[in-house]
Image 1 (spheres, rainbow, N blue to C red):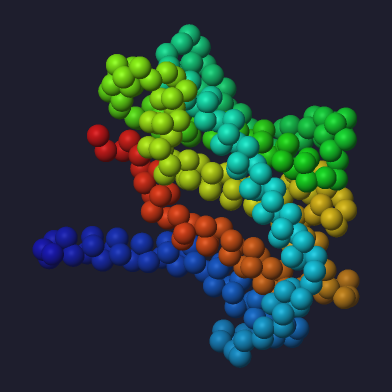
Image 2: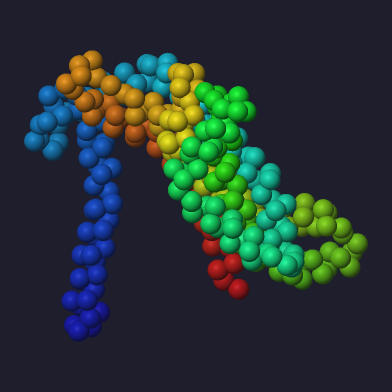
Length: 275
């Protein structure tokens, strides 16, 4: 390191450290608060003996396990259905040339960028007319409105980046369209499929607005709504420790999935970046 560049390196390191600290501080504060209960929540001591009563109370509550199962089932169904429907659509948009393809891609991107509140009232009437209100099917139906365009748009880029020589060689060997898709393209797109499915799963796992609007009973409630409804025995008290403990427990499944598939996620999200 030359003396002239040393101040720049130091400033850049300080800026990076400040950004990391800013990003990690909410997590640190949530972890610290989750191990406190009662008056200890307002203690000025940054480090104290941890109290796991919040976690014990949550893990012994049957409703928490039911809400977790509902969230996992809904997110898995949305991710699976999105992939099944998006694969043929993304293949057509990524590998075929036809009039209006760019318009379709723009519409898909626009649908992904719409705020949920923009279609909430209309979607509520549709769900009520279909008899899906207060059922997990309503959340699957609603989440697909945003998950499917996003998955199609993401997978179409993966299909487009595959070499065209593969199609030419397959045609010479007599492979039809379906055989090229299932025997050649999909095996090469496993990292992209896992990345798209996992992103869709995490978006649905964290979804709150639709779950709060389209479900009412305890049997159909998901984990984000359950966390939002945590209350204290007294109306003059907010159970910050319990809420923080529940929020941290809710982050464990997505973190485990990311750690399990991190190599394939990185390979899928960087596909096509290097020629």
